[in-house]
Length: 478
Ligand SMILES: *[C@@H]1O[C@H](CO)[C@@H](O)[C@H](O)[C@H]1NC(C)=O
Image (tube, rainbow, N blue to C red; front, top):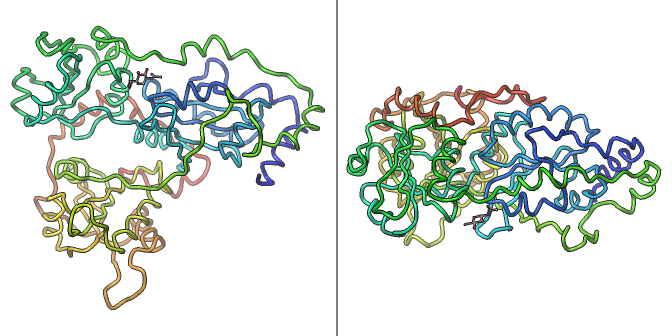
């Protein structure tokens, strides 16, 4: 184990006393988790969680507290915001096994395909409420099917019996709120999102305003019920509960049972114990305390595989900056990508991981996405791997200057891509105007109205980051 953790543990023992009391009070929106209930509350949750590993005496942890509590309030109902007191003797081996090497350490726990086997990522973004909220919302799993006129029938018929909820919206993306509701009702209600332009389906339900939530209570014959309340988590959950019970919230039991048990041990005893109790993979833990193995994070970037996604996410008059890696055509869909493409993907994956929380989305666009060809033509790009930045709202784009063929140095090295992205984040360098027609002009009024109604989490949260604020370029400014 790293010597500095050793020292912090030793120091905390010397200081003594404070370790029994955590940083967060019972009434805090931050859920206090320990080695014993981490598995049931976090690892097994169908919801995404962020977990802070901290020590109460650590200054950076105390500084983070207001922002972290603010993030917890914004994320209420959308994701779990939890904290583990690593100064508590009972938690020390667990913190060590989670690879905690300094305080505070923030990890985002994303539910995997199998219950209890989540993906755990280090959060390395800014320590501000907004950055934390954005990073967590980005990682809320999406169980909402985007349904079009073409596949509406098959979606409905797929499962005749199940209650269904449909959100009619003008948006192409699925809000964190809707995704979190779908998770609450996993196994109970099937969720879909239908865009306003799917006129057949819209007309079928007689929808005239957006967003509108409709519930098909049981099977497909029952009369649809239109939700008339506020587009907020609690009323929506209550409305949908008439068709199926939401999955039980494991935190409900927690509130009563485990907050009180705390061990009090004397500083002297802890001082003596500290060196031998040092957490680390070699430490034996009893089976029920054994934390889940932490999978190693494989960096990756999200793919925009359909023309609709590419357009809706990065090429509308409301889209902020997107970093797109356009992939070249391969002989067959599953043959390997050429080396420069792999190199570009590895560089952007690494960067997107590094910039987690900075709200600068990175996407790859495979050649089978027909819109990528159109985009290449419009922008005069080659058919090879290209990395570009586009900003639909401001109407500009930029191309990563990959080395020419005469140049045998690495084309897409992490270093060169990173400096290029940094320059964009800092607003340096020249931008090229996007040709007309590339960007889809969306209806401002409706989009804004919906954004307000649907995304509670975007209630403004101040930047309270203690450092690095100067480097941050807000998404909107790009
Ligand atoms: C997670 O979702 C499954 C359905 O896919 C459900 O059976 C289970 O109870 C949920 N777990 C929790 C902890 O809510």
